[in-house]
Image (cartoon, rainbow, N blue to C red):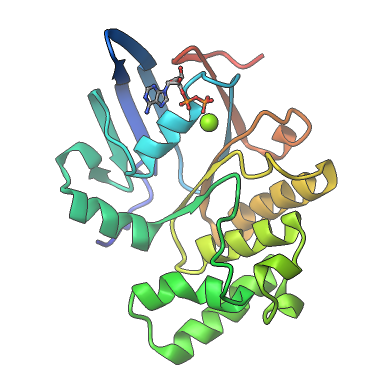
Length: 233
Ligand code: ADP
Ligand code: MG
């Protein structure tokens, strides 16, 4: 599914977004009416204590979960009106997802991991190899292309995970605490990398983090408190 090509829509937007979970007799309100708008080529960080709703919001924007009510528009498409199949396709083609742990395939080399989504998208072999190498260069891991995940440090594995996420050239990257398991130097490096992806490749990044030391790299900080968007001080 092609992303709309004009520049005047928000890459991601929600209106009165609510998500509740029913746990036995209890109703848990993870999101209580959230309105956000993320512009093209913007780097936004999402802060908030554990349990504040960050993962819930990111999963909905990534098309991995659906809202209880409210509207969600991603890359010009109303997610609520899309079938699971359409959502999966949009995700594969247009959204790069990065989790706290890179979840690389352990038996594949770094470059094979990066090529995997391109293989699934049916890219021809030569294009796939070229783009996988290019993506590894972006994260400064070209020299580790033939290594397997267990031969790499946590920070290096996460950079491979980022290369895998950017390989299909997604318009939007959603990262859920991508540096949560890394030391502060590796974390700074990943956020520096995000900054240059936004500046050089015009992607849009929405990244959840607890880490106050790295949010200064972002254009804007959103803060969730108990399922509500709060002013970030
Ligand atoms: P964060 O990522 O900021 O730590 P989450 O979005 O994971 O927060 O969780 C927000 C709230 O929703 C928490 O109270 C959490 O316990 C609850 N929650 C998240 N997922 C589920 C689920 N699948 N079932 C029930 N409650 C959930
Ligand atoms: Mg979370």
